[in-house]
Every structure is written in structure tokens, then in C-alpha cells.
Length: 346
Image 1 (cartoon, rainbow, N blue to C red):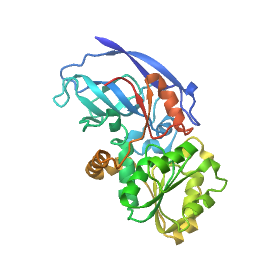
Image 2 (tube, one colour):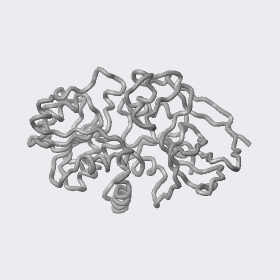
Image 3 (cartoon, rainbow, N blue to C red):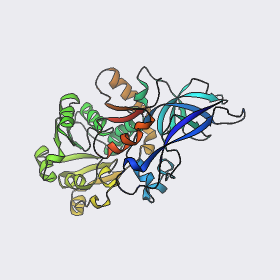
């Protein structure tokens, strides 16, 4: 037996901002047969994570591509792997049975043939929607929790700035910081997002960076006594402005630099004298570095969600055909919260 598998591929390498014409929906005949001795598992995809770092994999060359297997270059025409949740259709492995829910590296498509050695784990929904396991319980949540607590090492009462604060990671960082007892300000790209940060997520303040002519002055206004912790999702001019307003011994966690991914001319040039004389620590990190805090992250996040102290903000599109526009929208600021594509009903 076989099924038609629709999946998304890039037509050629993308070295600027992604456009609809860069992508194509391809169709393959996927056999639902697996040899008894095979370790492959066929999964029906249910929810897929859409993440901006993928653009670096689509470039003809990026320094990130050699750093870690998750960032390996994508070959035009091939299926694109991503983190997702699905249901097992076929397996002869003792650890996966038909109809098991699983989470791991799936593809931008309807089905995934998961090879031996690829990331795949049985999934306990924990009483939450399956989409949560792509977002708040997935790598976005881990990056937010681990990046904030393990990299930034915050203390109650400190002043925290989060850029792209309404995005998949930033909104969670701000909420974790408030739960710790920090003063939290976020930047976002619309008044709707600013309102969400202040009225729904409990940020102490927020501003629309598109309405600011001077980011350094904007941050000075929001932090008259300086910034202790900056969680950076943006890079570029925002990083420069944050460093200019940092306090001595401030910490900067570099989670992403989305303003630079598709436009190299926006690269940040922070004032190095500030970094030296204020003894500022700047550290980049990947979610894969943070598995040591995974158990703590999961238990605390479940606790906060169950108690209503943490909100999972999701932006869900429907169907394989929506994947290109969902991805492109990340670079236009279209999403609010975690961008997810629902492929099929549970």
C-alpha cells in the first residue's frame, strides 16, 4: 500500500529574504511497507514547528551549517526536516507501536519516513493540546527557559529587556522573568503586539520599535536605571542599543538574530568599550545545549501552565500548502507567538 505525500521543498538556495516563488509543493508516492528488520518508522505528521533559523540552512553557504546537525544545509528539492508531532503508522521497532504519538524530527510534509538514529520519542500529551509539544514544550520553550535561567542567570528584581517579545521564544522569556520577580520590558513590531505584552502577558512595559527613531533613547526611557539582562532574538541595531544601556556586569543571551538572517547589511556593531568597561557578558547558545535543564524546564512549565501563571501563545496555520507563507511571515513579523502548521487532525 502507498499514499501520496505532499511536501515542501526549496527550488534553489535562498540567499536573501524568502519569497513564495522560492518554494514548491512536491508529491511522492510513499510506500507504507517497512521491512520487518528495518528500524525505520513511518509517521503521519500532525503539527510542525516553523522556525526562522531554517533560512540559514537554505543559503548556499552559512557558518551555521557546520556547527550542528540540526543546522545542516538543505538540498534544493529535498524534504525539509523540522521539529514536529505525529502519529505512528508503521513500525516494527519494539519502542514504537502503531498509533503511538511521537515527537521529533519530521518533515515539512504530510508523512515522514523516520530513519534509524533520527530524533524521535514517544509523546505523553500531559493533558495538554498536542500543539503545545511543538511550541511551549518544544525547543522554543526550552530555549526560552534554559536561555534565560541557565545563560542569563537572572536574580529577582533585576531589569530584563526582551526583543521580539511577542515571538515564539520572547513571549515565554518575559513570562518566566515576571514569575521570577524581574522588571520586564519587551519590544515588538506593532501596537497589537505591544498591547498583548502589557495587558495579556504582564510585561511591565513594551514599545513598538517601528515607531522609535532612536532605539538607544527608547531603551533609556524604559530603563532609566539601566538593563541587567538582555535576551536577544533580533541582533542588529537593537543589540547595539541594548549594549549602550546595559549596567555593569550585565548579561546578554543571543538566542537569534533574525534581523540579520536575510540581510547581512544589518549586522550589529555594539560599542566594544561598553562591553569591556561594563564587563558585559555576551553568550550565544542553541537549544541543544540546554538538555541538562530539560527536566526542570518541563516540570516548572507544566506547573505554571496548570496554575494559569503562564500562557501559551500560538499562531496556527492549516495544511502543507500554508507552510511557505507561514515561514515567510516570520521575517515580516506576521506571527504572534509560536508559529505552527497543523497538517492533520489528531
